[in-house]
Amino acid sequence: MDYRIAVIPGDGIGPEIIAEAKKILDVIGRKYGHNFQYTEVLMGGVSIDITGVPLTDEALQTAKSCDAVLLGAVGGDVGKSNWYSLPPNLRPEAGLLALRKGLNLFANIRPAVLFDELKSACPLKEDIIGDGFDFVVVRELTGGLYFGERWTKEVEGLRTAVDTLIYNEKEIERIARCAFEIARKRRKKVCSVDKANVLDSSRLWRQITHEVSKDYPDVEFTDMLVDNCAMQIVKNPRQFDVILTENMFGDILSDEASMITGSIGMLASASLGKTKLGLYEPIHGSAPDIAGQNKANPIATILSAAMMLKYSFDLDKEAAVIEDAVRNVLKKGYRTVDIMSPGKTLVGTDKMGDLIADEIIN
Ligand code: NAD
Ligand code: IPM
Ligand code: MN
Image (tube, rainbow, N blue to C red):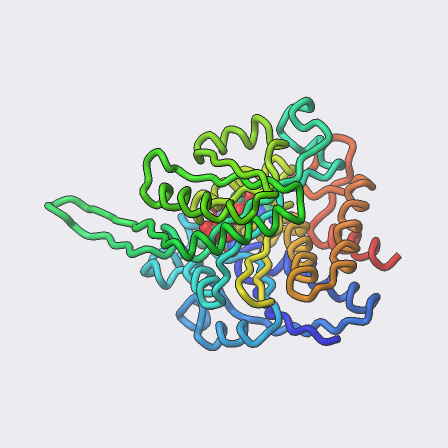
Protein backbone atom coordinates (compact mmCIF):
# COMPACT_ATOMS: atom_id res chain seq x y z
CA MET A 1 0.00 0.00 0.00
CA ASP A 2 1.05 3.60 -0.58
CA TYR A 3 1.51 6.05 2.29
CA ARG A 4 2.23 9.72 1.69
CA ILE A 5 4.44 11.27 4.35
CA ALA A 6 5.24 14.97 4.59
CA VAL A 7 8.80 15.09 5.86
CA ILE A 8 10.06 18.22 7.59
CA PRO A 9 13.78 18.00 8.39
CA GLY A 10 13.87 21.55 9.82
CA ASP A 11 16.96 23.01 11.43
CA GLY A 12 20.04 22.03 13.45
CA ILE A 13 20.20 18.26 13.95
CA GLY A 14 16.80 17.93 12.20
CA PRO A 15 18.16 16.79 8.81
CA GLU A 16 20.57 14.30 10.46
CA ILE A 17 17.93 12.54 12.56
CA ILE A 18 15.30 12.60 9.81
CA ALA A 19 17.75 10.85 7.45
CA GLU A 20 17.97 7.97 9.95
CA ALA A 21 14.20 7.75 10.43
CA LYS A 22 13.73 7.56 6.65
CA LYS A 23 16.40 4.87 6.50
CA ILE A 24 14.35 2.80 8.94
CA LEU A 25 11.04 3.43 7.13
CA ASP A 26 12.64 2.40 3.82
CA VAL A 27 13.85 -0.86 5.35
CA ILE A 28 10.38 -1.52 6.82
CA GLY A 29 8.78 -0.68 3.47
CA ARG A 30 10.99 -3.13 1.59
CA LYS A 31 10.56 -5.92 4.14
CA TYR A 32 6.78 -5.66 4.50
CA GLY A 33 5.80 -4.40 1.06
CA HIS A 34 4.74 -0.84 1.88
CA ASN A 35 5.47 2.15 -0.29
CA PHE A 36 6.36 5.19 1.79
CA GLN A 37 6.38 8.27 -0.43
CA TYR A 38 8.09 11.33 1.00
CA THR A 39 7.26 14.93 0.20
CA GLU A 40 9.76 17.31 1.71
CA VAL A 41 8.21 20.36 3.38
CA LEU A 42 10.03 23.50 4.53
CA MET A 43 9.47 24.73 8.05
CA GLY A 44 11.40 26.69 10.66
CA GLY A 45 14.60 28.63 10.11
CA VAL A 46 15.32 26.97 6.79
CA SER A 47 11.92 28.15 5.53
CA ILE A 48 12.59 31.70 6.79
CA ASP A 49 15.88 31.75 4.87
CA ILE A 50 14.20 30.67 1.63
CA THR A 51 10.66 32.11 1.81
CA GLY A 52 10.82 34.77 4.53
CA VAL A 53 8.28 32.98 6.76
CA PRO A 54 8.58 29.88 9.01
CA LEU A 55 5.66 28.05 7.34
CA THR A 56 4.11 29.06 4.03
CA ASP A 57 0.42 28.41 3.28
CA GLU A 58 1.60 26.12 0.52
CA ALA A 59 3.72 24.09 2.98
CA LEU A 60 0.73 23.76 5.33
CA GLN A 61 -1.49 22.64 2.44
CA THR A 62 1.10 20.06 1.39
CA ALA A 63 1.20 18.70 4.94
CA LYS A 64 -2.61 18.57 4.98
CA SER A 65 -2.67 16.63 1.73
CA CYS A 66 -0.46 13.84 3.11
CA ASP A 67 -1.35 10.87 5.34
CA ALA A 68 1.07 11.86 8.11
CA VAL A 69 3.82 14.35 8.93
CA LEU A 70 7.27 13.45 10.24
CA LEU A 71 9.30 16.28 11.76
CA GLY A 72 12.92 16.60 12.90
CA ALA A 73 13.13 19.88 14.83
CA VAL A 74 13.09 23.59 14.21
CA GLY A 75 14.89 26.55 15.73
CA GLY A 76 18.39 27.79 16.24
CA ASP A 77 20.71 29.14 18.84
CA VAL A 78 18.62 31.92 20.35
CA GLY A 79 21.73 33.90 21.29
CA LYS A 80 23.50 33.61 17.95
CA SER A 81 20.97 32.99 15.22
CA ASN A 82 19.56 36.05 13.44
CA TRP A 83 16.12 34.39 13.17
CA TYR A 84 15.47 35.74 16.65
CA SER A 85 15.76 39.36 15.56
CA LEU A 86 12.49 38.80 13.64
CA PRO A 87 9.06 39.52 15.15
CA PRO A 88 7.87 36.51 17.25
CA ASN A 89 5.30 35.34 14.69
CA LEU A 90 8.03 35.06 12.05
CA ARG A 91 10.48 33.01 14.10
CA PRO A 92 11.14 29.26 13.52
CA GLU A 93 8.95 27.98 16.39
CA ALA A 94 5.95 29.95 15.09
CA GLY A 95 5.96 27.61 12.09
CA LEU A 96 5.60 24.58 14.35
CA LEU A 97 2.77 26.18 16.31
CA ALA A 98 0.99 27.11 13.06
CA LEU A 99 1.37 23.53 11.81
CA ARG A 100 -0.06 22.03 15.02
CA LYS A 101 -2.94 24.49 15.01
CA GLY A 102 -3.47 24.23 11.25
CA LEU A 103 -3.84 20.45 11.48
CA ASN A 104 -5.92 20.76 14.68
CA LEU A 105 -3.58 18.42 16.56
CA PHE A 106 -4.82 18.97 20.09
CA ALA A 107 -3.45 15.79 21.70
CA ASN A 108 0.28 15.35 22.16
CA ILE A 109 1.23 11.86 23.32
CA ARG A 110 4.71 11.55 24.86
CA PRO A 111 5.57 8.08 26.19
CA ALA A 112 8.29 7.94 28.84
CA VAL A 113 9.58 4.39 28.92
CA LEU A 114 12.86 3.27 30.44
CA PHE A 115 14.44 0.54 28.34
CA ASP A 116 16.04 -2.05 30.65
CA GLU A 117 19.26 -1.61 28.71
CA LEU A 118 19.40 2.10 29.64
CA LYS A 119 19.10 1.76 33.40
CA SER A 120 22.73 2.84 33.73
CA ALA A 121 22.00 6.03 31.74
CA CYS A 122 19.09 6.93 34.03
CA PRO A 123 20.17 9.46 36.68
CA LEU A 124 17.83 7.98 39.30
CA LYS A 125 19.01 5.53 41.98
CA GLU A 126 18.48 1.80 41.41
CA ASP A 127 15.91 1.43 44.18
CA ILE A 128 13.80 4.19 42.62
CA ILE A 129 14.06 2.70 39.14
CA GLY A 130 13.09 -0.78 40.37
CA ASP A 131 12.14 -2.84 37.33
CA GLY A 132 11.57 0.31 35.29
CA PHE A 133 8.75 2.72 34.55
CA ASP A 134 6.38 3.26 31.66
CA PHE A 135 4.11 6.29 31.67
CA VAL A 136 2.74 8.63 29.07
CA VAL A 137 2.27 12.37 29.17
CA VAL A 138 -0.92 13.44 27.38
CA ARG A 139 -0.38 17.11 26.71
CA GLU A 140 -3.03 19.51 25.41
CA LEU A 141 -1.39 21.06 22.34
CA THR A 142 -3.51 23.76 20.72
CA GLY A 143 -4.59 25.91 23.65
CA GLY A 144 -3.34 27.55 26.82
CA LEU A 145 -0.52 30.06 27.00
CA TYR A 146 0.80 29.06 23.59
CA PHE A 147 -2.23 30.39 21.75
CA GLY A 148 -3.64 33.12 24.01
CA GLU A 149 -3.36 36.82 23.23
CA ARG A 150 0.06 38.30 23.97
CA TRP A 151 1.64 41.71 23.75
CA THR A 152 4.64 43.71 24.85
CA LYS A 153 4.43 47.47 25.28
CA GLU A 154 5.21 50.30 27.60
CA VAL A 155 2.70 50.71 30.40
CA GLU A 156 3.12 53.68 32.73
CA GLY A 157 6.72 54.06 31.61
CA LEU A 158 7.61 50.39 32.23
CA ARG A 159 8.32 47.73 29.61
CA THR A 160 5.48 45.29 30.17
CA ALA A 161 4.50 41.95 28.61
CA VAL A 162 1.35 39.84 28.78
CA ASP A 163 0.65 36.23 27.82
CA THR A 164 -2.89 34.92 28.21
CA LEU A 165 -3.65 31.43 29.48
CA ILE A 166 -7.06 30.56 28.09
CA TYR A 167 -8.98 27.28 27.99
CA ASN A 168 -12.63 26.54 27.37
CA GLU A 169 -14.55 23.49 28.55
CA LYS A 170 -14.60 21.85 25.11
CA GLU A 171 -10.82 21.99 24.79
CA ILE A 172 -10.42 20.45 28.24
CA GLU A 173 -13.05 17.79 27.70
CA ARG A 174 -11.61 16.45 24.44
CA ILE A 175 -8.07 16.10 25.77
CA ALA A 176 -9.39 14.53 28.98
CA ARG A 177 -11.37 11.95 26.98
CA CYS A 178 -8.25 11.22 24.97
CA ALA A 179 -6.26 10.55 28.18
CA PHE A 180 -8.98 8.26 29.59
CA GLU A 181 -9.20 6.30 26.34
CA ILE A 182 -5.43 5.81 26.36
CA ALA A 183 -5.51 4.76 30.03
CA ARG A 184 -8.15 2.13 29.25
CA LYS A 185 -5.64 0.40 26.97
CA ARG A 186 -2.92 0.62 29.64
CA ARG A 187 -2.92 0.29 33.44
CA LYS A 188 -6.15 2.31 33.80
CA LYS A 189 -4.81 5.25 35.80
CA VAL A 190 -5.07 8.94 34.94
CA CYS A 191 -3.35 11.64 36.98
CA SER A 192 -4.48 15.11 35.95
CA VAL A 193 -1.87 17.77 36.63
CA ASP A 194 -2.74 21.42 37.14
CA LYS A 195 -2.14 24.47 39.34
CA ALA A 196 -5.67 24.72 40.71
CA ASN A 197 -4.44 26.33 43.93
CA VAL A 198 -3.63 29.49 41.94
CA LEU A 199 -5.02 29.54 38.39
CA ASP A 200 -8.63 29.92 37.27
CA SER A 201 -7.83 27.99 34.09
CA SER A 202 -6.65 25.10 36.30
CA ARG A 203 -9.76 25.26 38.46
CA LEU A 204 -11.87 24.89 35.30
CA TRP A 205 -9.52 22.12 34.18
CA ARG A 206 -10.12 20.28 37.45
CA GLN A 207 -13.89 20.70 37.24
CA ILE A 208 -14.13 19.43 33.66
CA THR A 209 -11.70 16.53 34.09
CA HIS A 210 -13.69 15.37 37.14
CA GLU A 211 -16.89 15.50 35.11
CA VAL A 212 -15.31 13.49 32.30
CA SER A 213 -13.89 10.96 34.78
CA LYS A 214 -17.47 9.93 35.69
CA ASP A 215 -17.76 8.37 32.22
CA TYR A 216 -14.73 6.20 32.98
CA PRO A 217 -15.47 4.48 36.31
CA ASP A 218 -13.05 1.69 35.37
CA VAL A 219 -10.14 4.18 35.34
CA GLU A 220 -8.56 5.35 38.59
CA PHE A 221 -8.50 9.15 38.57
CA THR A 222 -6.39 11.50 40.68
CA ASP A 223 -5.25 15.14 40.60
CA MET A 224 -1.83 16.52 41.37
CA LEU A 225 -0.46 20.04 41.49
CA VAL A 226 2.19 20.60 38.87
CA ASP A 227 5.02 21.53 41.24
CA ASN A 228 4.43 18.36 43.22
CA CYS A 229 4.28 16.37 39.96
CA ALA A 230 7.69 17.69 38.88
CA MET A 231 9.03 16.37 42.16
CA GLN A 232 7.12 13.05 42.09
CA ILE A 233 8.45 12.23 38.60
CA VAL A 234 11.96 11.94 40.04
CA LYS A 235 10.89 10.64 43.46
CA ASN A 236 8.73 7.80 42.22
CA PRO A 237 8.05 7.68 38.46
CA ARG A 238 6.57 4.19 38.82
CA GLN A 239 3.38 5.65 40.34
CA PHE A 240 2.33 7.15 36.98
CA ASP A 241 0.44 5.58 34.11
CA VAL A 242 -1.16 8.48 32.18
CA ILE A 243 -0.35 12.09 33.10
CA LEU A 244 -2.97 14.45 31.66
CA THR A 245 -2.00 18.09 31.54
CA GLU A 246 -2.22 21.42 29.74
CA ASN A 247 0.12 22.70 27.07
CA MET A 248 2.88 24.47 28.99
CA PHE A 249 2.99 22.08 31.96
CA GLY A 250 3.17 19.15 29.50
CA ASP A 251 6.06 20.77 27.66
CA ILE A 252 8.10 21.11 30.83
CA LEU A 253 7.16 17.80 32.48
CA SER A 254 7.93 15.83 29.31
CA ASP A 255 11.48 17.19 29.11
CA GLU A 256 11.90 16.18 32.76
CA ALA A 257 10.43 12.75 32.02
CA SER A 258 12.75 12.30 29.05
CA MET A 259 15.86 12.66 31.16
CA ILE A 260 14.94 9.77 33.42
CA THR A 261 14.60 7.55 30.32
CA GLY A 262 18.32 8.20 29.81
CA SER A 263 18.26 11.23 27.53
CA ILE A 264 16.02 13.69 25.77
CA GLY A 265 17.25 11.96 22.62
CA MET A 266 15.06 8.95 23.51
CA LEU A 267 11.58 10.48 23.80
CA ALA A 268 9.21 10.24 20.84
CA SER A 269 5.86 11.93 20.35
CA ALA A 270 2.66 11.80 18.37
CA SER A 271 0.38 14.80 17.92
CA LEU A 272 -3.12 13.72 17.05
CA GLY A 273 -6.48 15.27 16.24
CA LYS A 274 -9.81 13.97 15.07
CA THR A 275 -8.48 12.36 11.86
CA LYS A 276 -5.73 9.85 11.10
CA LEU A 277 -3.39 12.64 9.97
CA GLY A 278 -0.89 12.99 12.81
CA LEU A 279 2.40 14.80 13.34
CA TYR A 280 5.28 12.74 14.66
CA GLU A 281 8.37 14.31 16.17
CA PRO A 282 10.97 13.80 18.87
CA ILE A 283 10.27 16.00 21.89
CA HIS A 284 13.72 17.56 21.77
CA GLY A 285 14.77 20.59 19.79
CA SER A 286 17.29 21.32 17.07
CA ALA A 287 20.25 20.94 19.46
CA PRO A 288 22.37 23.67 17.82
CA ASP A 289 25.27 22.79 20.13
CA ILE A 290 25.80 19.43 18.40
CA ALA A 291 24.32 20.07 14.94
CA GLY A 292 26.31 18.82 11.97
CA GLN A 293 28.61 16.71 14.14
CA ASN A 294 27.00 13.27 13.69
CA LYS A 295 26.49 13.13 17.47
CA ALA A 296 22.70 13.41 17.80
CA ASN A 297 20.73 10.44 19.04
CA PRO A 298 18.26 9.52 16.26
CA ILE A 299 16.26 7.07 18.43
CA ALA A 300 13.53 9.56 19.49
CA THR A 301 12.87 10.32 15.82
CA ILE A 302 12.97 6.65 14.83
CA LEU A 303 10.51 5.82 17.62
CA SER A 304 8.34 8.73 16.45
CA ALA A 305 8.28 7.12 12.99
CA ALA A 306 7.17 3.90 14.73
CA MET A 307 4.34 5.85 16.39
CA MET A 308 3.35 7.12 12.94
CA LEU A 309 3.09 3.56 11.63
CA LYS A 310 0.90 2.66 14.58
CA TYR A 311 -1.40 5.66 14.92
CA SER A 312 -1.73 6.96 11.36
CA PHE A 313 -1.28 3.76 9.32
CA ASP A 314 -2.46 1.01 11.71
CA LEU A 315 0.80 -0.87 11.08
CA ASP A 316 1.15 -2.09 14.67
CA LYS A 317 3.34 -5.05 13.82
CA GLU A 318 5.82 -2.93 11.86
CA ALA A 319 5.92 -0.38 14.71
CA ALA A 320 6.75 -3.16 17.16
CA VAL A 321 9.51 -4.40 14.85
CA ILE A 322 11.14 -0.97 15.02
CA GLU A 323 10.86 -0.84 18.82
CA ASP A 324 12.40 -4.33 19.10
CA ALA A 325 15.22 -3.36 16.77
CA VAL A 326 16.02 -0.31 18.93
CA ARG A 327 15.98 -2.50 22.04
CA ASN A 328 18.28 -5.08 20.45
CA VAL A 329 20.82 -2.48 19.35
CA LEU A 330 20.87 -1.09 22.90
CA LYS A 331 21.19 -4.64 24.24
CA LYS A 332 24.25 -5.15 22.05
CA GLY A 333 25.82 -2.15 23.80
CA TYR A 334 25.74 0.54 21.11
CA ARG A 335 25.23 4.08 22.36
CA THR A 336 25.23 7.63 21.06
CA VAL A 337 27.11 10.05 23.30
CA ASP A 338 24.03 11.27 25.22
CA ILE A 339 23.30 7.75 26.56
CA MET A 340 26.90 6.54 26.74
CA SER A 341 28.09 4.72 29.86
CA PRO A 342 31.30 2.83 30.72
CA GLY A 343 31.88 -0.40 28.80
CA LYS A 344 29.53 0.51 25.93
CA THR A 345 30.37 1.19 22.29
CA LEU A 346 30.09 4.82 21.17
CA VAL A 347 28.54 5.35 17.74
CA GLY A 348 27.46 8.37 15.71
CA THR A 349 24.01 9.30 14.41
CA ASP A 350 24.33 7.51 11.07
CA LYS A 351 25.86 4.35 12.54
CA MET A 352 23.04 4.11 15.09
CA GLY A 353 20.57 4.28 12.19
CA ASP A 354 22.51 1.61 10.26
CA LEU A 355 22.57 -0.74 13.27
CA ILE A 356 18.80 -0.41 13.81
CA ALA A 357 18.19 -0.94 10.09
CA ASP A 358 20.38 -4.09 10.13
CA GLU A 359 18.38 -5.49 13.05
CA ILE A 360 15.20 -5.11 10.99
CA ILE A 361 16.70 -6.63 7.85
CA ASN A 362 18.15 -9.67 9.64
P1 NAD B 1 17.23 21.10 22.64
O1 NAD B 1 16.26 20.02 22.94
O2 NAD B 1 17.46 21.41 21.22
O3 NAD B 1 18.63 20.77 23.33
C1 NAD B 1 18.80 20.68 24.73
C2 NAD B 1 20.05 19.84 25.03
O4 NAD B 1 19.76 18.48 24.70
C3 NAD B 1 21.25 20.24 24.20
O5 NAD B 1 22.42 20.10 24.97
C4 NAD B 1 21.25 19.23 23.07
O6 NAD B 1 22.53 18.96 22.52
C5 NAD B 1 20.65 18.00 23.74
N1 NAD B 1 19.92 17.16 22.78
C6 NAD B 1 18.72 17.45 22.23
N2 NAD B 1 18.36 16.49 21.36
C7 NAD B 1 19.36 15.59 21.36
C8 NAD B 1 19.57 14.36 20.66
N3 NAD B 1 18.70 13.87 19.76
N4 NAD B 1 20.70 13.67 20.90
C9 NAD B 1 21.60 14.13 21.79
N5 NAD B 1 21.46 15.28 22.48
C10 NAD B 1 20.35 16.00 22.26
O7 NAD B 1 16.71 22.39 23.42
P2 NAD B 1 17.22 23.92 23.37
O8 NAD B 1 18.70 23.95 23.23
O9 NAD B 1 16.58 24.59 24.47
O10 NAD B 1 16.56 24.48 22.04
C11 NAD B 1 17.25 24.63 20.80
C12 NAD B 1 16.26 25.11 19.73
O11 NAD B 1 15.31 24.06 19.46
C13 NAD B 1 15.42 26.31 20.19
O12 NAD B 1 15.32 27.17 19.09
C14 NAD B 1 14.07 25.72 20.54
O13 NAD B 1 13.01 26.61 20.36
C15 NAD B 1 13.98 24.59 19.54
N6 NAD B 1 13.08 23.49 19.91
C16 NAD B 1 12.39 22.92 18.89
C17 NAD B 1 11.58 21.83 19.13
C18 NAD B 1 10.85 21.22 17.99
O14 NAD B 1 11.12 21.51 16.85
N7 NAD B 1 9.91 20.33 18.23
C19 NAD B 1 11.52 21.30 20.42
C20 NAD B 1 12.25 21.90 21.46
C21 NAD B 1 13.05 22.99 21.18
C1 IPM C 1 8.24 20.96 22.08
C2 IPM C 1 8.92 22.30 21.88
C3 IPM C 1 7.92 23.30 21.34
C4 IPM C 1 6.84 23.45 22.39
C5 IPM C 1 8.50 24.67 20.96
C6 IPM C 1 9.63 24.56 20.00
C7 IPM C 1 7.44 25.56 20.39
O1 IPM C 1 9.52 22.72 23.05
O2 IPM C 1 7.72 20.41 21.10
O3 IPM C 1 8.28 20.44 23.19
O4 IPM C 1 7.02 24.17 23.39
O5 IPM C 1 5.79 22.82 22.22
MN1 MN D 1 9.54 21.22 24.61
